[in-house]
Image 1 (cartoon, one colour):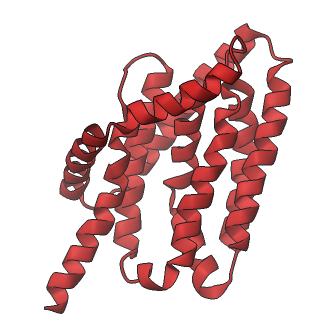
Image 2 (image 1 turned 30 degrees about the vertical axis):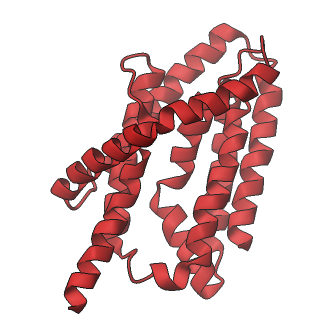
Length: 230
């Protein structure tokens, strides 16, 4: 878990720096920076989405994931959590839910999170997660300077997500083959595009309700493995 714990700490440290910087940045400059970051998020999403190897599976994942997400209404649950925290910071313009969802996806859906966690759990090799920690730490400074404390909360998403993969590495290795990682990244990248468009006020996509779509490629591979064994 060392690699994940370092990643967790890097996001918290970066967020603290970003929050401190936020107070000294004029709103006009902050808004312009946020628009620029939104465009970068869309670019990152497009770059990852086009690498998907199974278009049909990606479509099915989005449909099934959206159905599950709407039935559970993850977006509403997340909003309620954000509202509770925002009440404690009333009047400070902190966007808890937006920062949490945006950076949770940014930090969790990439191949570095999956492959790095597998290597950490199977081989005790934390190099990939250490490199990811540096990247996420810097990104946390930038995002927290505009989105506030919600970015810091995303560190717990990383802790749970990467920690689960690390602890279950032995059993997950059979399922998380390269094609599955690629398709998970592609699905996650589509969600990132949605986030970017929302942040630009172009759309109002309930991105949180599409989060279950990310795990559908894993379920698909698990079923495929069972069929193959028979």
